[in-house]
Length: 248
Length: 255
Image (cartoon, each protein chain N blue to C red):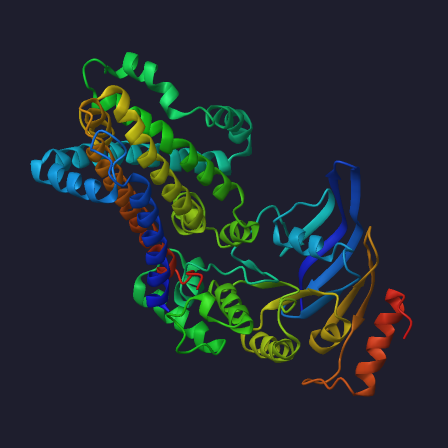
């Protein structure tokens, strides 16, 4: 596997009324092509900021973030962000939402792509539904489909299941793994949920408190589907809790 | 449920009519008229035909003033909301001009667009424009300024910018607030048209009120007020319906 994203010495300083706040304090991280990387860390540690910088929504104050060797300077369709609470548009139907990034393709072509991704996320029959008629999990599926429809190389997932109820969240975890395996995208997911990290990740980057650095990157070779009661699963969880300084 | 609502509303009207009748019992047409005299007066002015001309004149002026205010106010408001620097420069000015009663502009309206003693639709339209403009600008500004950052980021992520962003994100996202502003503005314009027509023109429902007063036909005054209320109600119901339809089509109706 080749390296897709390299983060070197990434610093991010936010200027606020109360002075400058250091959020990222020299983050080094490599993301491999096609892997599922989870960034886990305490709430407010700056992991979302790191993701925003990787997506090009914000720029690092110093250091560099390169994707395929090119510095990230702005958002791009090649790397799509999936928001925590549905960022899909309530004024568009499911079909229009998923087709949002497809520009001015001829209708037949667009329809074929949209329907392919509607099938991929299991929303057949809901093409004409509006987001207000969907459950939280279904909205999240629309969001995934909208992101995947533009065929990006990288998916950024910022606590994508944070707004869902516990049961739906469990279901969506296996869904995202299924989708990831079918599409082979590079996925970077940010979460504060250690169990979620262990269940999903190939590798887990554990971040420190703010100003954040990457404390360590853990390999996770547990076979999928993963069983939370597996001793290896628990051991890895405990290891992460240990790094985060949580007594169990 | 629907019947219940109607019934309850009817009780309010009946109570008011009863009170009105009781307080004005035996009054002549030069005095405060009762419901019966008002109804008879309404019949008379309706038959005379002058009422219809006055309704058309008022609605015509409101339509122009309101449309101009919407045509200028919505784009201006969205621009103010979208560009913080523009907002910093112009929003204080807009907020300072907003509390001035549109009627206060009347002397200048007459100088600028002609008017009293000659009637001028332009002056009245200008006053109506002034009355509708500020609620529309304010609603549009706040709608654009409070656009959900996730929508902005999604759009930039998918490379949707410029006209496409305006059409597919900005406009639909701000539409509910803009429609509320339009509805408010139309209500204000309808209130102001009557006042404006009392001062400078020789047609319209406001003129009808003043003219009837000068003729000491208080029954016609009350009749004109009833018509003003009914048309105001119709305009508001129409706007409410447009609002509901626009939101329902986007699956955003809050029911």
